[in-house]
Image (cartoon, rainbow, N blue to C red; front, side, top):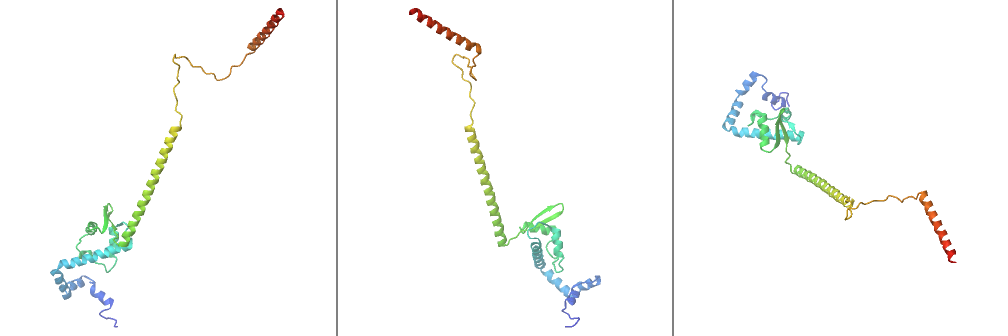
Length: 222
């Protein structure tokens, strides 16, 4: 293969690029360019629609592959996309601005989009059947965990209620003091009354005196 082969990458690159203003002018006036312009002019919607599809597919593929379902700034993802030298330019599509393209993705349900002070944010929605099944399984598991926690909470509440009712039944309720029919006072004795020394002596003397009188009466009778 010769050094200046017509089909080498370098030769193709040279033909594709316009190195300066004069080169760009030569390119736009060339027969090949004029022929392509006529083809596009005859059916512009076909070409714009085709480039729009290519741009959208490549952009979403870059978003899915690099960031998955993570929420990202749209400008950051776009700068990643245009870093590829073979990317489709947005000016060849139906969208004039990045914000218009992002809003389109939100309307069609391909991404979750929202706008903040820092600009538009974008989040890829994975429509893969396996991913959807996996997400549904995670949601089901989460719901089961919440139901289990709710059942435990209700069980604890019931146990606390039962314990509270039992405690209320076992507590002794205070009763009012009941008086007699005549309203007589009620006295209470908290201990046994102690005998004093004087009282005990009087009782002993009385007992001895009674014994003496009994003996005298018996003697007189005899």
